[in-house]
Image 1: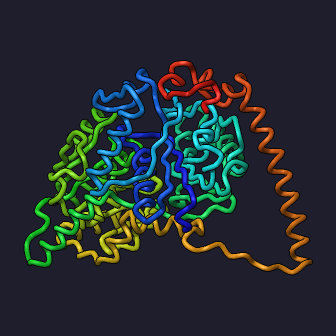
Image 2 (image 1 turned 90 degrees about the vertical axis):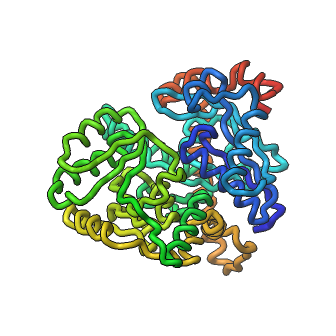
Image 3 (image 1 turned 60 degrees about the horizontal axis):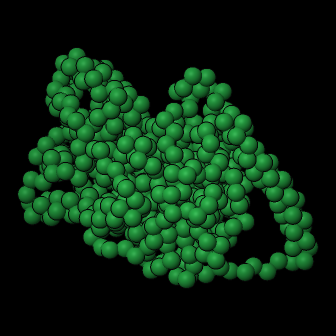
Length: 464
């Protein structure tokens, strides 16, 4: 990739909210910079104090964007071990309580000056463009890349009238992603499909987990017992995050799995119900509060059991593999990337789950090769990203025959005309409060309010 090109990464969340769309784009920016791409800007949401108190954990709040940026950079440096010189800019956001998400306010593409508008990476492009009203992304930027993180359809289906809502949302997502993105990357086939999209896991793991795995491999090579504990599962403690499937498997096969002792780590709205269900089992299942997966108490566990099929690419599965553990998980499209690793054992039914779990209790994890460890890293994820969007090599100009060229020109012109008309319709619809509210926008979010403008130092309502 030409190091002089400017890459702006827009995302839907920011630290200290430890959600995937806050953490992974941050690592992406750092490792693009590390790869020699010097003009990188991470664009993240700024929340007023009222929303910060709702969203950020442990009563962490910030009085200014500069204060939050300092926190983010320190958090990152503590994990990657190097200082990164990419830029951080903030756009105005508001927290939607019903969607449990941060939504952009105003035209956030204006955060990047026109002179620097080259490549835009939209992390969750559907989320960022549902209510976008302003300059068209494809017009402002030479290349717009959308990275699909979340299977919104699966979440919507669990709500009231979920089937109808999912049907409508599918077409809304296809619409906005189509008119605003040149290229679309899906982290796995577990997401909604988009025309012309490719499936590629462009995420890596926190380097700390690879360091833990390296020490475990050294212990194994020295003939030491590297793993002294049994099996565990970690995840937000809500039924939809794999707890329902896991406890059902345990309940149905208590006798066969009597030798299994399992520790569950997590916090969430279903914690009490999960604990009650675990108590009813005639086997040892211990339930603990949430804890950082890199904490020392996890290092010696040998087996990570993860029956969840609601994740797009499960971060904790990648982390467990990086630490050198055996992972027993469902044979599901969300786990396709992990199946290349010898320590990842997948099951298709209850019988296979029991067999693999018992086998894992009696065997030691294999020792990952350097190449396998590299494939889990953010360096490898950055390589995959650049290759997926053809930024790993100079652009090539292809010569076409006059007949083919004329045909393609006419076809592309018609396609562009239809797309332009579609984009115009979205621009008009997103410019009226009534239509925005119908589609679920936060009230009065067409422009940032006075408080947000003051905190971000905006001179006027356009956010410039």
